[in-house]
Length: 359
Ligand code: NAD
Image 1: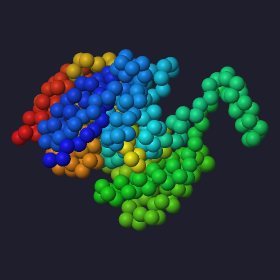
Image 2: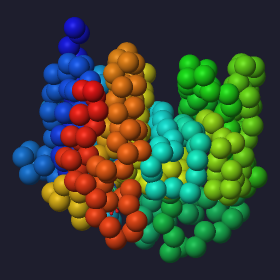
Image 3: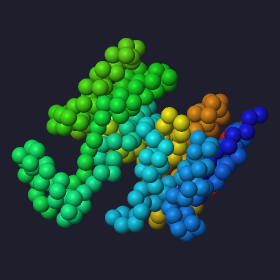
Image 4: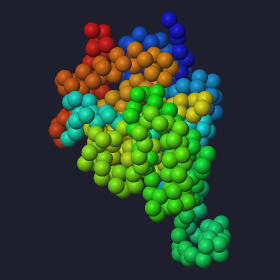
């Protein structure tokens, strides 16, 4: 049997707990993986004085596939997001987040099965920012008034929102190809083109052009605020949502809320060469080391990874075992239960999944 070499970044906070359980679940599918374990985030600072050491980057470069736990980003001070840095270094331009209702999850909805395809490189996340009071900020404010005749308050900070034809084409083609490959019927482009004509308007124009190349896939567009309401009222109508970076980020959390929370929402970041799989949630610091959080998002990220490396059967088996444990409800964590109730531990839920895989 083929043995895969894959980079594993446990991350920090609850990351090590949920990646450990996930590793055991993957092992129980019979797929053999030689994990190259690397640090990023707080453990990397402690060991190397660097939140994203060269060794970690080299390992991903070499193995091309990485399973990653969540990594803390300090707010306001300290280093910039390691998650954003990884996306930039490996040009992971497409973030794919499937949202599905599993029977037994704590949700008001049934039959949701949609995928958010989020552009990962451009938009307000490009990291081009000008801090209040800095000389270059004053210069840019003056230049903008000179060029546009519009006034920006001098006590402003500025974040730049670039959206290109090439970047939009790449993500929209990815969304349509994904839809075709995964037998999905419809792509909905999300935008605010009525207000931001030269960025979101451009994204929408590109979407309409790319859609013509895929006559087998239905295409429509929605303004982002309307999209948010429609997702709450009739999420079953949607299939693949193609979004610029910021809207994709926000709508992903909305969709996570629809299907029962962040603990059930995995994500994959794809570039042309490298793919990184991770849960959508963060490092949940208040639960660190308590062995109580839901490992499902991390396990579902592993399901996406197994499918990506061609282990489709193992991916299906693992997803089914997880779905059964959730449906039975005996070994589920606190977030599946009424507010204020405790649940099974992270490891108990993992053990129940492993038991199902062996049946
Ligand atoms: P978070 O997702 O870590 O946690 C918010 C809340 O969601 C938790 O307090 C908990 O109630 C719940 N939750 C999250 N994961 C859960 C799980 N597996 N099981 C059960 N409940 C769960 O969001 P936050 O508190 O805003 O962020 C904490 C840190 O994580 C920040 O530093 C943030 O920057 C970082 N972060 C990292 C990633 C990533 O690594 N990709 C993503 C988001 C946030």
